[in-house]
Structure formats: C-alpha cells, structure tokens
Length: 188
Picture 1 (tube, one colour):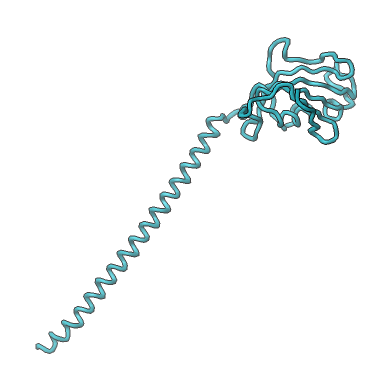
Picture 2: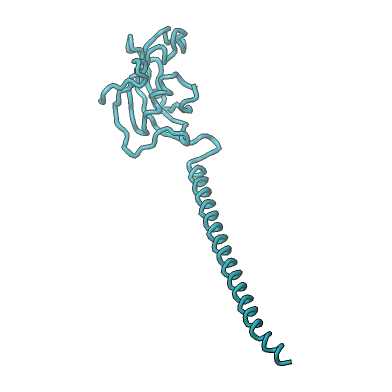
C-alpha cells in the first residue's frame, strides 16, 4: 500500500493507494469527465459495510466535479487513473456531514471507501472519436488556411513580378520609341 496523502490539506480527505494504475492509464479530464467505479463504503467507527457495488458486480457512474457525489469523491477521483484502487477516508464535512445520509449512515460519520476507477468516458453526445475527430478537423482547417495563405502570397508575388516585367517592357518600348521618333521626324 502507498503512503497516505492528505488531498485537502486539512485531513478531510485522505487517500492511500491500494493498487497502482499503469503509468499510461487514463485519468478523469475535461474531455473524459464521466467515471465508472467499483467501491465499498464502511463506517470508520465500526467497520460496518454500508454500501458496495461488489455484491451485484455493478459499476457506479457519475461526472467528476459536478457535485453528484460527496465532496471527497469529487476531490479524490480527480487524482486517480483507470485501474487504480485507493482507500479514501472522508471526514464528515467531506462526506454527508451532520445530516447523515443515506439512512444507514449516522450524522457526523467518518467514512472509508475502497474505490477502483474502472473507466473514464466523454460526456453523452461526444465521444473520444468525436473529440479527436474535431481536433483533427481543426488541424486540417489550420493546414488548409496556411496553404491558402501561402498560395495567396505566391500569387501576390507573381502579380508583383508580372507588374514589374510589364513596366519594364513599357519602359523599354518608350525608350526605343524616343530614339526612333527623333530619327523619323528628321527624315520627313
């Protein structure tokens, strides 16, 4: 087991890693805010299990940082990676407080959860593909704009060169007419 880490600085949420995730495992982010977890919650005082997903092998899903769960979970899950299992000790202010809820949790109870982060997912209506597709589309648009800007610059350069060449031809004609014009006038 890892060392206990005080995630709130006041001892309100203590996290101890039970099983490390792989270093390249996903973590909850702005693009992956929905999490699936397995957990078991016990009362710190008695060790009595008050809630678990292990009995029916279900996962609990929620969006991190939206207040859908107790504060301790919003804080702790942000620090986890898929595959990690952590023991999260939650003081009452970061759990259910003086209200005590659900009914089997007494007021001002300190809770201990063993939580496994099973998955991180994008919000409904977006998917990992659509997020990466959007990034790819924006990259492609950027490239197209750069190509168009380069082509426009090249076209401008060609126009400048053509203008300069035309001006040089006109000047050459004028210069040649000046010389011929004097000779023709004298000959008449």
